[in-house]
Image (cartoon, rainbow, N blue to C red; front, side, top):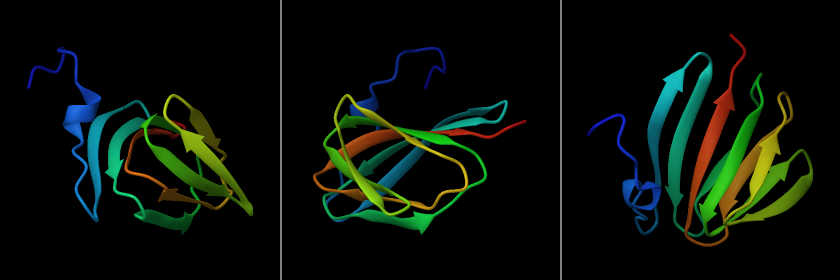
Length: 105
């Protein structure tokens, strides 16, 4: 794969029935970008990290819980995950999304 060529994000993360698929796309200077494809009902359990992160939904719908509050995030929308606050992610529908981790150097 040519690192400088455009990447078809939807084709790069196939939706697999009953599965959560992830593909790291980039990591440098404290930033890491991961592409996810989650079938409906798949989840990432509650956890917290020491740096902020950003979820960008490409298509589908996620239920993103931050602390005690659930947010619904749909295609074309983003959700900031503040550092130090527990968060969890669940696919309401088959969903492809990007996670950007912003570690401090």
